[in-house]
Length: 242
Image (cartoon, rainbow, N blue to C red; front, top):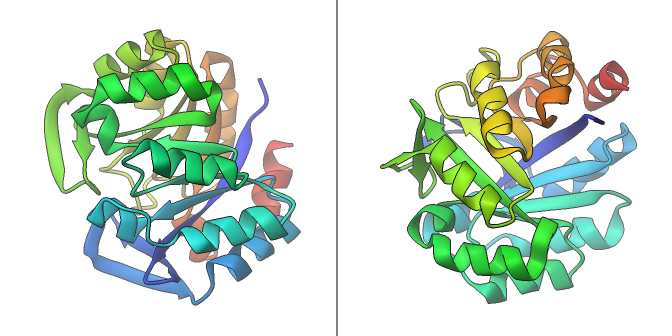
């Protein structure tokens, strides 16, 4: 199985930011233009860009979508987007604009029946974002933790047609502490789907470790803080796994 690097652009107030462990009070601004950041990533060899509307995730509606659409229209990369997608109109808006994959997060927990309908209708253009804290699903920008085990929800949605999961272990996100590889493998093996690892990647070695288990269904890694803090470049990451 091929392994893909997804450089992350988290948007808040129209800027590129990173939050530490999803905490809106622990924000670092890394750039004034999501588009310029995406352009730089593409020039360094990124084939996909992972974009998150943090304002949207918090407020439950699309807020920074204009930046996503501009990237889709003007850059030769595929885009997956999450944050603030709560209605079918939101899904259609992004897909109609040319976004490759729409990530559904909180709604998969609060309204799984609706998400299953979308999976039937839109197939592999819907990815499920599962964010876990101690194995349990966290929702609403990680402000709440449910009583649902991430792997149980993953299995249920895979049976309904989900083919791609983006799995984040909140404990590692933004900490540059290395990904929770065991949890990522478990999610892939239990669901039989492709799982993109998110959170904790701090070195090229971490990418090699994840790529080494791609046979289990681990199909890629989202990389954020490591790039922004110059641990390595997108170019180096792409070369590492090619």
